[in-house]
Image (tube, rainbow, N blue to C red; front, side):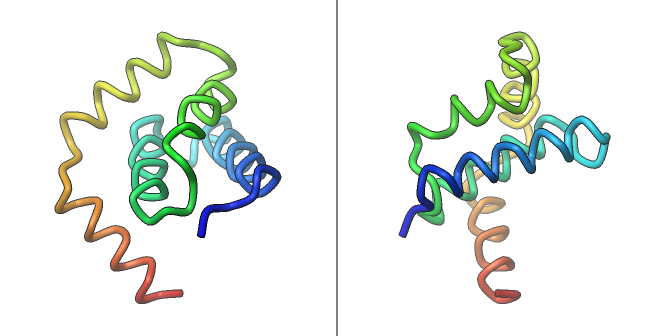
Amino acid sequence: MAYSQSKTEAVATHLRNRFMEGNVEGYEIVVALISMVKAQKIHIDDVAPVLFNVFFDNPEGILSALEKASTLVDDELIDSIINEVNENA
């Protein structure tokens, strides 16, 4: 079941804060969002608004994070992340 709009917004705010504190890289946020979509926690339509929130409406920053994530991510990695989260939940 997907998160409510308010919970999705809370996720976006949390990710932005972690990014601004330097605790996560942009590509890690992309990987997290892809994992959340695949786990059906958020809808694919929520990804772009979350990224714009995290990157303060900076399309260049979003594109850079997407490009880096695309070189690192495959379906096996996403499935592994989802399985690990489900095991620890």
